[in-house]
Length: 400
Image 1 (spheres, rainbow, N blue to C red):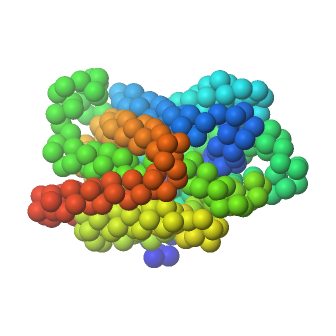
Image 2: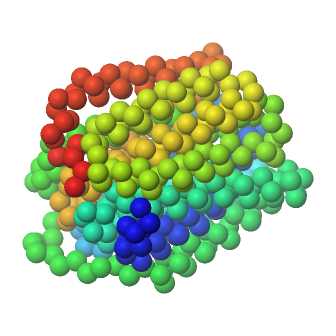
């Protein structure tokens, strides 16, 4: 698999490193934020679930408009730079927050930035990568992105130990890699020229949406189903805290999850170019069920570690695959819109899943939350099996 990596265009690597730096910045904060909200600011776990659901839903909903705008303009990079810059500029708000209100505002604005950059960046990856290497390209970008997602919490642990659990000092430090990400994108990525062969129209008008065929809408439905089965990763942090681990070491749960995610994303992306997509999705759901069941029984740190590692394998198996499937089943000139609509549905599903998970946690405990996740994942797996005949032989199921 080393040879395909070498053949990937340099722009894919740069976009991966941009994602890595921003994830270092974001995850330094997000790995500590649930504890900061509950332990320092005194909010309920249900509120944490709502905040996380709203934050992720906001990011995914905004992608609809940023993706469509990138299609209309015929350019991706400018919107991506704007989104990354907005994310970097919101980091100091976490450090100065004295109440939940400013944290919520900062979290939502940060996610607006993510929403602005997300669909144009994914469309830019699809534009740069050769069609027969898209799985590998998305896998590599996701891998580098996830390296940031475990380096960030690891830095958070080190700085919490160094600065005696000073959350705000860690939040200030997180500004640095965010600014670096913006600079690298601005000067390191050259967008390929796109020649508009038709009159420029609103990408989300009815006639254009009709060009997104049945196979694309299958992918949208599957993406929403997977998101409903998987709630916010903030609950992994809170589960680790229950295992008796010292507060400074709790972010290591995200290090473990993202280390596995980073290590598995590229191999599974490479594999998705060569095997049935439906089978790989089904295997991903089976791994998620196993993760939920282990976490439901997790009263010791090693049990939680196994559960979050399985969670990371699930993410590596499915996230790059779904991004590849969107690119493969949408017209090139509507690719930004396609990612936007896909993420709108996923965003609404994330809001519902995280809110319900937080309510279950407050009312019935952590075990009920993870048992419910396993049950819904099993239902999703049954739904995928029922539709298997429609998936097999369908374009969404086929490697290139």
